[in-house]
Image 1 (cartoon, rainbow, N blue to C red):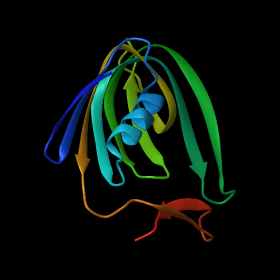
Image 2: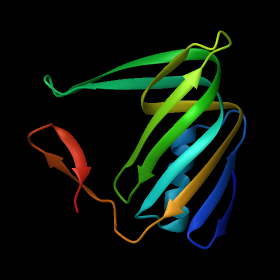
Image 3: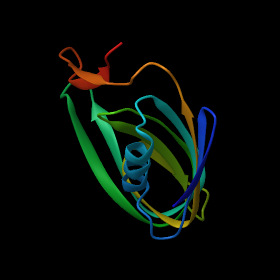
Length: 135
């Protein structure tokens, strides 16, 4: 992972074989990030997608392997949680997306972290069963 801070932004490049969420956790620890929003593009060869059932209040997950272009990666990073969603497309231009709980870089992964001022800590929302911003 290579990265540079430019004021309220951190530009990050991940290389083949790096785990996206583990790398973002390392970045969070290095810069003491409490309030960042993420956007990225790149390529992965393994991704675990999740879907949250609001009625059952539980996630289902499935792992996918292959060569995928990351067409969208969005999320937030706080002191207690990194929450990301991803959309990927295969070589047939079919896309999959959902909550991203794991992804491994196959080509490159280019991330922009935009820092804010409000700490993005979470608390459990009893109505939905989700960890939501404590603001």
